[in-house]
Length: 330
Image 1 (tube, rainbow, N blue to C red):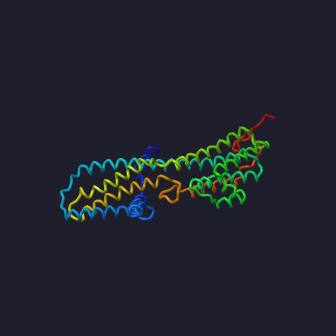
Image 2 (image 1 turned 180 degrees about the vertical axis):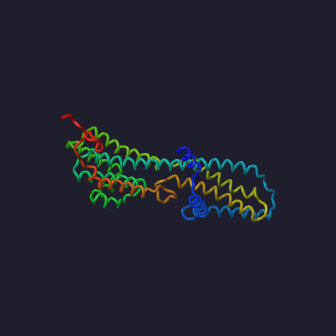
Image 3 (image 1 turned 135 degrees about the vertical axis):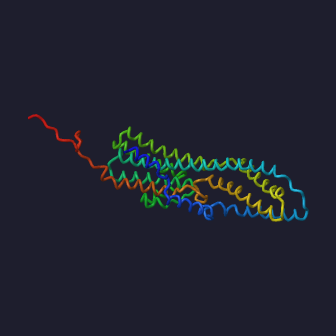
């Protein structure tokens, strides 16, 4: 029976008809999209090279020189394609590494809050303050990576205007918040509300938050090598300048060919630029840090709502509540 069931499941299509239709519609929507793409950014340069190619075609109609062969152009095109792929892959690697680091911030924030509530003091004020300061870490990290100092979302979260002002004046905001959290853990140990073994486990989660932010700052402050970028763009310009000279035919043909070739070359180069800084909201396809931080804050504050359930205690019993009562001889 199970074999026939597995065979029937294996014969089912991986994608339903509605899913395939959705992706088909999305293909055309993405292909024809204008907003949120690099097309508006590169179109002025594409038009420039298209007009240049048109002028070359008009000059050829007057001078009528013999076009050079397509061999050098084809060889250079393959070389440029390789360089552009390497540049785009480097940009995507930075974007993906940043996303993994922020995934670590999400997990470590949850772990830190859960560990603090599980092993920390039973004082409700301490527990709420600990969770709120843990939730504040992601917000200050996002603002710090974007070079921003204004943190209005912390006022309703921390409910302490003086603390928010001190955070905004701090030289490194994530370190300041992490220091406050460490101080709360140290106070709990000093007052005998947390044993040192639990403190080491909880503090390990806090230090990993700083490690993740440090990884993001490494990406932010280490741009792609300028020598590679400048040389690649110089090759692109020289190639597009020589292309219409090699592609002369009728007066309009060089302009059309140059524009059609310039668009993918310049667009791929611009994509690498947009991926270089995955934290800035000014860049296309930047990481959705705002929703990520809102998710972290919501998850952590929800832990305070479950305090009533997590603190319920009852006498320990070795017997399962579903086991039959034991009978003794009497």
